[in-house]
Length: 153
Image 1 (spheres, rainbow, N blue to C red):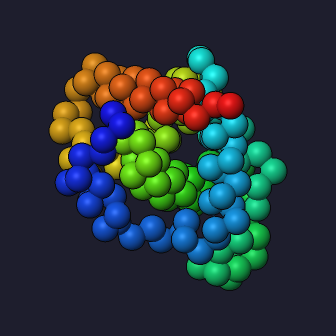
Image 2: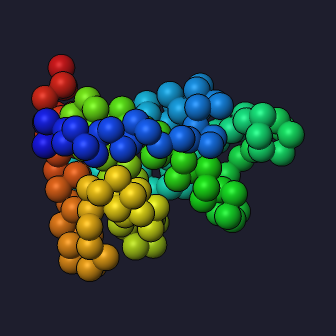
């Protein structure tokens, strides 16, 4: 997966991120947290672990008042989906994988609906078949692990 598909990359780069580009410090911290487990075999972050203790500071959310994810309501899911999607732009450009594959639901231990929705949106995934989705997810998990392992010191 080292070589990203130029059509998928173009679609990812065209996507407008409603929240992520408004809080670059939190975006960097989310990437740092994922990077910390990236090369560890069998290690994933849950969505809750990923956002633990973070305050999102966005002018377009709650009038700029810092927001902590916790209730996992519609806004919380939109925020984390937007930030993870934006991180995918970079990871796909750098290594041809969706870095968000390493973040999973605590209950199902798989990515949420947004992971697959983004993949379909950019034509990286064309099916809604659960087996095809799982295969797509594992392909990106393996590519991420390889990419991170190749950068380990």
